[in-house]
Amino acid sequence: MNLLDRYIARQVLWFTLLVSVVLVTLGALFSFIEQQSDVGVGSFGVLDAVVVTALKMPKQAGQLLPIAALIGALLGLGNLARSSELIVIRAAGVSVIRVSAAVAAAGLLLFAAGVVVAEYLAPPLETYANEVRTFGKYANFSFAGKAGVWLKDGSRIVSVQDQGADSIYGGVYVFDLVADAQGRQRLTGVTRATRATLVAEHSWLLGDYESTQIGENGTHSMREPTHRFETEISADLLGAAIQDPDVLPVRGLFRYVGHLKANGLESRTWEISLWSRIARMLSTIVLSLLAVPFVFGPLRSSGAGARMAIGIGIGIFYVLVNRTLENSGDVYGLSPLLVAWAPLLALSAITGIAIARTR
Image (cartoon, rainbow, N blue to C red; front, side):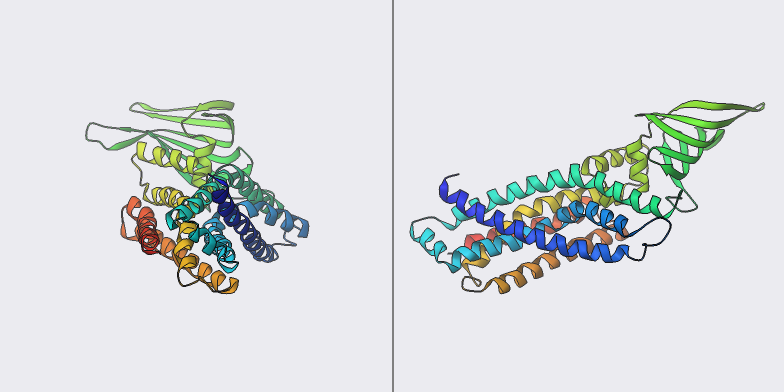
């Protein structure tokens, strides 16, 4: 990138940063107001509400980044147009494609920053925020309703009823199954433990262990104070089962989708969430580029308010289309790849055609 490319990219990045701060601050305000209904419940207080709000801000920043990138590009390029700098740039022989490349470079940097926030910063902070909120309200809690969480691990079915602290669970049941010659499943053993601690990647330590093995000639029971239990169900997979897909990083979603497919379970909902997350991250670059034809065209002489309104309108419309398709795809059984990538491909085509027609 030469000096001019860096100058254009810097304008886009600076205004995107300002817009992100404004949007995240507004989101944090609404989040703090939402926490007020929990203040006074158990030991959850105002300070806890402030902590929870602050911990949720990185997730909000990641979710709002595509809209912030569009508005920031509109404002940054619009600022150059209002001061006639874009006219000088074009008069110097710089093409619209060259300007678009500089904006795309800024969008690529925003995409990289969004990946870091969404994958490495937001998930653990969001999880900790949920723990602060939940453990402030209740000493112990059921995290999946009365039915608990059910996971399939090969020929085993594992049920976990509640969580008392990080990596410590209660009400664990394990059902061992075997298939007969006709493919019908038969119960061969039941294991119960009042508590379970994840001590390694695929190893649990069960407390107050009770096991009953069912054979052709009767049953055999065994009790132990503690018992080491090996399973492919790790803390990440258990976390995936009890958390909202939006809380998990892409790598966690990818592992959980693989686990579901390996065990022959329905994975459509999680696949839609996985591919939609990736598509939304990439939309940051495309939405940044969408500002180029607007600034060179109908918004050339418009003020910052008009550009802000246009950016918010387009961003909200794109998010609504995405969410509608995600929900519809899950309900009507549409392909996860089609649901996730169709809006981005359509937006990319519209943006490319608009830039190509810009003079």
